[in-house]
Image 1: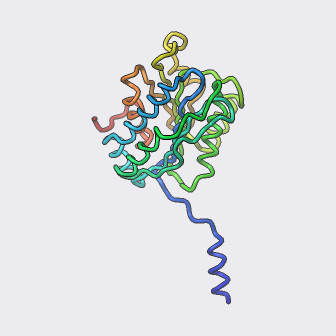
Image 2: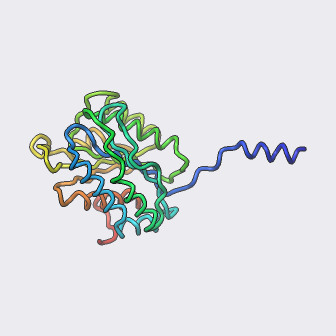
Amino acid sequence: MRILTAFLASLALPAPAEEVSVELVLLADASGSISPEEIRFQRQGYAEAVTHPQVLEAIRTSAYGRIAVTYVEWASAGEEDVVVPWTVIHDEASAAAFAAALPLPPRRAFGRNAIGSALLFGKDLIETNAHEGWRKVIDISGDSPNSYNGPTIEAARAEVIAAGITINGLPILCRFCDTPTRYPDLGAIYEERIIGGMGAFVVTAESDTDLADAIRRKLVLEISGQMPGETFAAR
């Protein structure tokens, strides 16, 4: 009877979390300044980056040889949309599957920037998934530092950092907007107002052709735990 009771009790226990090198939330800007063409362009940039040999090598040589990643588009508060749910990437096939899933869903996030809400949405995704990362990272991209609704950036940033999550930034000087004119120092603004936590950094996408390359550089750094300026494998 005791054996049966212990067995039944064990069935009620939650499954242990899968250990990964990094839990990575990719928060991609889908606010009003981002056109449908740019949505596709961003998704394609991430698809190309995640399947790049340099990124795959960074995953292979990471602490557990695998990462958990999800791709989310954000706009107004409450408009955050999970485009690709949590996926464990550990080899070329799993990376290719993640990349193939990126272009499929329609755009479902709309409205004006709500950076604070996006950050807290990322935090919730990390705290409620089935993985346990050696490091936990939210990576937010955007073409503006403004936040028009929802929690303030300052409050959300503090809450995320207090939870032991690092916020990295990918400011984008977008293809069809006036970001370079309005925010020529967007990278510096991200460093001052948005990123934070252990090892936080910014990688700026300076042009159309630079986006996939910037994403790739950023992913390698996030997966390896290095900082910009440190030496990592050549292309």
